[in-house]
Image (cartoon, rainbow, N blue to C red):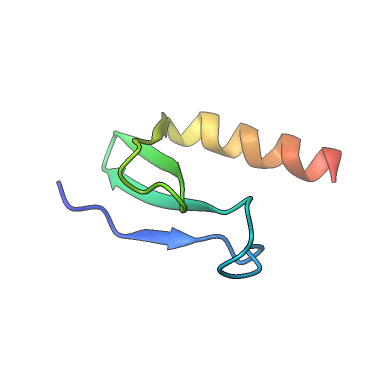
Length: 62
C-alpha cells in the first residue's frame, strides 16, 4: 500500500523537533501518524473514530 503522507501545518520547518505527518492508510484501515523526522521508524495506526477523538481532545486542551 502506498501512503501519501502530509506534514502538519503547525510544523515550523526543518528545525522543528515536534513535527508529525498524517497519512490515509486505506478504506476501513484508518489514519497513520508518524514522526516526520523519522519516516522509516514506523507509525501509529488510528481508526477514523480514534483520530477524530484525538483531534477533539487536542483542541480542548489548546
